[in-house]
Amino acid sequence: MAICGHCGADDVVGVEAQLRIHGYDWDYSRARAIGTLGTVTQVAQQTAESDSYGEYGDESEIWVVIRVDALDRYFRKYGVSDSYGSESWNGVFEEVFPQERSVTIYERKSE
Image 1 (cartoon, rainbow, N blue to C red):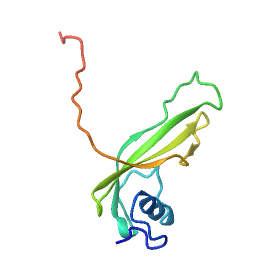
Image 2 (tube, one colour; image 1 turned 30 degrees about the vertical axis):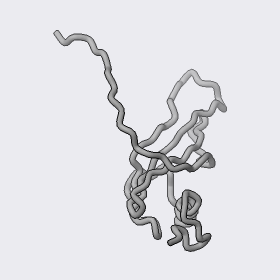
Image 3 (cartoon, rainbow, N blue to C red; image 1 turned 90 degrees about the horizontal axis):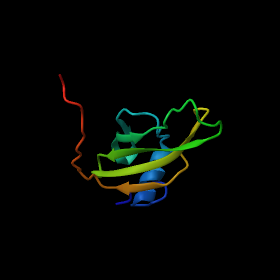
């Protein structure tokens, strides 16, 4: 069964096409129903780092990870943010897989 009824794709291309056709907003973090994909939920993101000392015109990589419920699959979309606060989501769209990691942090002893 094709994911995208318009282009017939049944892979990552079909998912991205459905998101584009339905006007998915990469900055919108709430769950939203999208065509044949069902509910799409943003599950992770990397936003631009604010640095008041940055040069005008500098760009930072940004990305969001979404979960497509109907497929039980995850996808990441890359973009860039500039020092003026503009974002462009013209980067790579790829399937990603959740991986758990254990992280150790070190803090001062409470007194």
